[in-house]
Length: 125
Image (cartoon, rainbow, N blue to C red):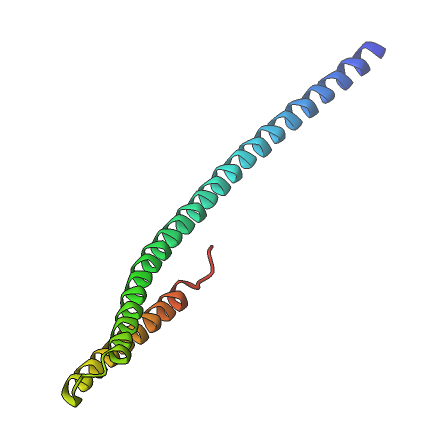
């Protein structure tokens, strides 16, 4: 009879071992699936950040050149006005109009930069 009890205990232990092994396989499968999903989300985040940074770099490059051009125009025209005392009223008016145009261009460029930054200031998922 002891033999039957031992065999019965061994059968139950074997069944429990098989059940635990199946549960472990399910958990392993779920863990692998979760890892794949996490890796996909991390890759998407990285791609979003790369896209964002690339767009930001392009915009900053364009804006910096626009701003530098406008500033150079304003400085050059202002120096011309200061240095040339022989300019007539019409020439002075033309130079002042060019200074105003450059200042307006500079203003538009900075507004464009502000709008771009506001649009790109979104949460990264």
